[in-house]
Length: 564
View 1 (cartoon, helix red, strand yellow):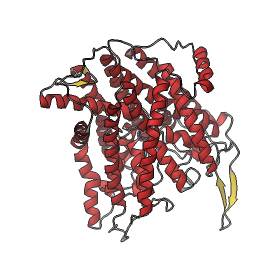
View 2: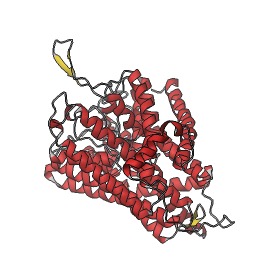
View 3: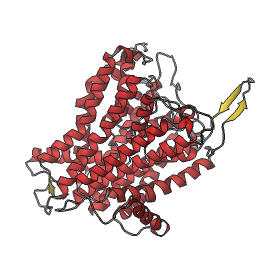
View 4: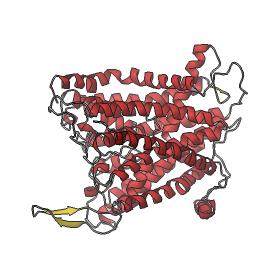
């Protein structure tokens, strides 16, 4: 049942997002344009020191090939270092619970997961990872993977804005500024807020407690608040505890729940404003923002409605299975929609317990390519792929030359954009099909029928979209899932970044022409509507058949009293 308090929460969420977006977006535009900003006097010395230590010449810019090479080398090297740490954590310090080393398949899956900003967790964090691993391994990648996404988005924006040049900026400079001026300060402030609300932040040992029944229970503690802060802000999603933000130590109060939801969207939304500011026409940014917000509100409305409907199988007016009663249907629906819109993957409920149509919304959010605000950086460059496709299609429809920001959109850009849009879909469908044909993999499913299909599909959708959330109805810690999902996560990340940087390089070399009567406008309600149509048509044509066999048919069977 809805009430005025729920409506007020939604209004406050949208108001908070609208207030943060221009402020943070304007700040990031100044940071990445190399202008003086509020943190320059405080942290400028640290930035210069990092360049000296790393041998980086900040004024030396890179072509798209060099930018991509630096990005890949940095990420693969970080992945290998994390893999080594995971397989040796038992012999390293800050392991008060004496947790063992991870086996290679799980370590590889986890290393690829955190390197790609997916944060898929085939383990329970508090029972698997030492404090050192959480801080110096996983949390570090929470920062670097988010900064990598921002860097790729910046390269694309420069490619669209700059004229007749091969230079897209310096990857090392973008990585440093994103971490030093954006991610670290915001994470520090948010971690303090979480700690004030009761989220633990300690290097102490676990605590033993006696329950009301007289049993002894071990309460895992650790540097939780700092991990949760960057988990939300960096759209990472990897929780300190296995229950993620459903755990009272990660998300203890309605206020922390609201703040955790808001911070997921904060940077992705601000990056869209930053794009408008860097193009010199803020309407370009607001047009894309409006499309993202419309998709978000539509998905949220469906999910909220679906979770308020009677459950004929259980005979209940509404279903609270898998939900925290302190958040209720509204807080659960808003969190689930935002976290799958933004490729965060943090959860405050078990998505496997959602109604069929309620579970369809997170699936569809990810299937659209995580472009509804999306991951940090990834949402912007993913949506810009759809923008280029929309401009090209609109140009063909009305007989005008496809142009965006004064530059012609030609065959090379469209080919790369199609690769970026379709590559995740290919690995999702192939991975799901292979799993359903492999008898050993089917043993990991908790459900049969259409719900079992949804569990399998969700896993590969989440991996390819670099989201990391799960239906929680599947045992993913097997060799099959550890290896196949690692491959899908890698392709889902870099099969988009490579085309994005190739497009950036090609666009940067082009001349820009002034607007004329024949220029198709890329701002305003008309273009927003066209953009929404292209996004939905691509998603519907690609995934409608498999969705029909999963959550859609499950909904009609549920109405007949059948469950799986």
